[in-house]
Every structure is written in structure tokens, then in C-alpha cells.
Image: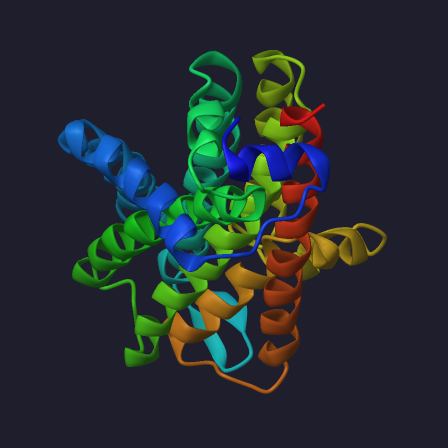
Length: 271
């Protein structure tokens, strides 16, 4: 038995090596390159269609939306939320459906763990790849929004970092779902019962203040609310100290989901 795998099965502990994380990431990147044109089409087109519909259709029917520094056009209001919302979707998909296939269907994780790669390295490599996919869609959709005139501040370049952090957070959550899912049917529920409500009720399409008063605290607790809030502030130039709390929420959530995913993945693979 491979020394690394033997240590997994006995103690669950292996020294953490960054090269193991990079190796997992490179494996996924190599697979991605094999069909990158199809992959990039999926990454870009759907959010671009949504942005175009808002900018040229719905946005024409809706007046300005109030933010801290005054009113902005509806399309300008919505665009940052769509950018980071799609970062969530891609990280969640890659680290739930993608990870489940590698875990259960193709048994790729068995091969990876037979190499000198620890469970923590495997999990972090997975989450890092999910974050990379999130960064890809963030960059592409943000560029399109900029060309369409939906970005009002040079601070919007910071949305790339927020998209990456959003990818880490939801990559960890997606890996948790993959580790506990008995079948793909449960993963479908994750998208229906978690992803969709987050996308629509985290302030992407309307201010949280328009929700009933008893719903607003729930909306503020949702993990997508905070990257949407930061991205909108960066896009419009409406920066303030209160955003630090949202940034802290985002970082803490990302740091919490990863070790949980690692533990559950170890339990799933090494029982």
C-alpha cells in the first residue's frame, strides 16, 4: 500500500505540501484544456445573456435604484450581483457535481490518494480549482459589463478578488455536498434549494430593504449577500467601512467550509 494512503487509513494525518495542492489543480486544469472552448462558452454565454436582457430590456422598464450615494440605473445595480452570482454557480457546480463524478463515478480520487497527496491537499486542490473557475467567469462577465457601460468606477477591478473569494467559499460548500451526497439527486436539491434562493434573495436583483422586515435578517445572513454587496460598492465607487464586515464574513466562511469538507471527504473515502 502507498505510504501516503496507508497513513490516511491509520491516522488521517499527512504533512501538508503545497506541491500536492498544485498537482491536483494541474490535473483539473489539464482536463479543462482538453475542451476549453466548450467550457468557456458555458462560463461566458449564460451570464452575458442575462446582462444583455437586463441592460436592453428589463433595465429600460425600471427606474433608478437608490444606493448610499444616490440612485443608479437598474442595469448598473444588477450587473455586479450577476458577476459574483455566476462565480458562485461555477464554483458550486465544479466542486459538487464535478467532485462527485471524480469521487464516485470515475474514482479519480482513489488514484490521486494513491500518489503522495494528502486528503487536505486533495480538498484544497479541489476548492482552488473551483475558485479558478469562479475567477474565469468573474473576469469574462466583468469585462462584458464594462464594455456595456455598466461599471462606473475603476475600483471594479477589485471584483476579481471578490469573485475568487466567492469561489473559495462556495467551492468548499460544494465539496461538502459532494462528500455527503448519496446520489446525484441530492446534488440537484443543492442547486434547487440552496443555489437558486441565494441567487435571487441575496440582493442581486433588488435591495434587501425591499423585503419584509422579518426576512431581511435572513437575507443578510446568506453567504452570497456579502460578495454582492462588496462587488456593487466596487462597481459604483460607493466604498465605506461597513464593507469590511462583509469581507470578514466572506473570508471566515471560506476558511470554515474547507476543513469541514476535508473531514467529510476523509470520512467518505477512508471508511
